[in-house]
Image (cartoon, rainbow, N blue to C red; front, side, top):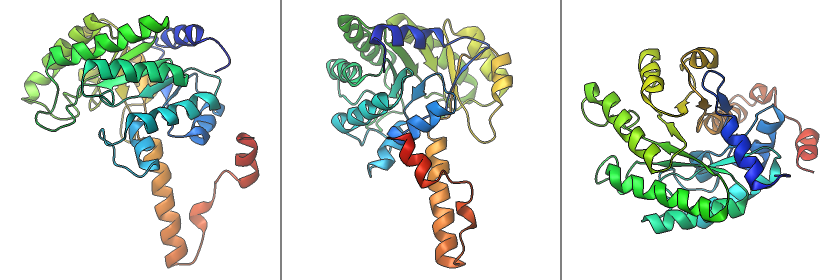
Length: 276
């Protein structure tokens, strides 16, 4: 970043406009971040899945805090737009640990975070509401202590993990969203929702910016904008597409002995210049 953390954080807040959503093609390293920013992204978000895969570990709280923050620092150093970091469940066992993670995020140069309520130990799909609220409060207090208006995006996985009876998921999501907002979250991220009716109900029922996950088969940005969505994340989709290309190109070269899958690549000189 070439500006102050306070200014970058305020800009990130301002980019969350219902009906004119912030679109985030999530990056996983310095090169992908610079490419995304070069395509006109107003901010850059990391994807925990892409970061984890690039470091040789699976997604799902398997990555340690230090390595995750090192990537955040490289991404933030690579771009001049605000950066928001996917922290999974906070890379910590308790709220105090979440506060330390957030302090590390700010030191790394990011001004936004995603914190999810999925329980990493698998004993129950989601953390109890009050437990998650304590973690969100810790994140907010750590940012306040640093004097940075960090954008805290509270992710709830009720739909993504198919928690409970389908008929109850909207109500459970709205309940969690209200609690997380009261605990200090600025926005609410609800992955796993794809139909317009439910997305519209989320926008109507959540007092704050709503973030949805998009990818192949999802509603286009224009439709999501019309529903009042404030943020559209591609999550791990870009990383998945990149690794899919690796497999297609390798299969083609090793099988047919041809190289058509490599058409459309960014060439060596352009990539080198991009990172010079």
